[in-house]
Length: 291
Image (tube, rainbow, N blue to C red):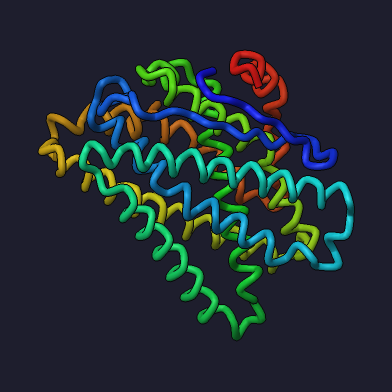
């Protein structure tokens, strides 16, 4: 591990907050399989994280004092969740800033991501207010959906050796694997917050189903647009330069398509994030990464 690690257990939560300090100064231009398409695909995912994870934190803080969240164990989990997400934002911001040296305006992409989030939640709040749906509910259910998405991607990263092999830079490998471990450590926190407040009834289920559909659509469109922008900057927005990435990600057994069944699992009425047992996977990876 080429990063200093400071760990806090956040007053007894079931998972710790690790403060990481990665150095991105020597990350090569094409750090994923030496391929522009794969590198830009992953870089634009990173561009989504700072604003996305701030949204997760803000959504959870907005309801934290709700009387149905008085359980001290859940409060400790919320504290640790907020701490981990803050560290993810910090490290991805640092990487995104380093990508600027190659002429990629990732900062603008971060700002555009924030605009997409704010516009989407504002429109839904206006449309659903007559049905008694609050902004707090919309924000929290959106966070539930997006947390499921990130946890599923993270589990695939930790399990799929072909995906792990694409990292030809050790710093980027460690960044993504550390992030993947923590996404699965806290994958149930916001869902538990949501169900504690809103329950498991038809309204709560309908809202989270709608949130997943909208969130997946917005992520796909935004991230695809960002990837095309970076490919264009490099003069590689061509079929020849994009086909490897498209096959790797979207072929029948591609990185993203392999995850569709698990993503759809979110639509089960009795779904819970911990239905997918990743405990041993996390234990193995924490040992490998020295966490």
